[in-house]
Amino acid sequence: MVAGLLAVVVAMWTNLDFLNEKLVGEKPPHCLPPYEVEWIPWEPGLVEKKRSEGEVVFLLFKVDWDLTSMVNEKRLFNSDAFVGKLEEYRVVLIKADFTDQDPKIRDELVKYGGMILPKSVIFSSDMRGEPIILPELLTPEIVIEGLNRAAGK
Image (cartoon, rainbow, N blue to C red):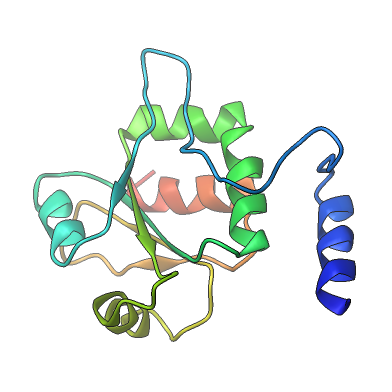
């Protein structure tokens, strides 16, 4: 019951309309051309590979049932400013789905401060740059600030 009440409070707080919007069965985010947003499934070494290729990386750790990550994604991908920054910096989006509690993802999560989910991390293309660990509840402004830092702007 508390979980249900919490879900309603979070939904009201983020201006989601539960009557018109389904939060179950998450769909991949998408944007209008010319920039197509695509989540790449996480695998060991992928973040490092993309960074070595000169890419800015946004890494999201989540589980299927997590309402906060659903709210975050909805809020971010409904923001033209956020989507514009993804396009401007050609950000690579990587999603680590911890729903099945993959031990490799668990080990990766621990690197960035523990098992709290969702967790979002931004990496610059500079391999010496420190990861930017974002708070659990995201706004476009918070993520844009992180992307700007990662891009050196």
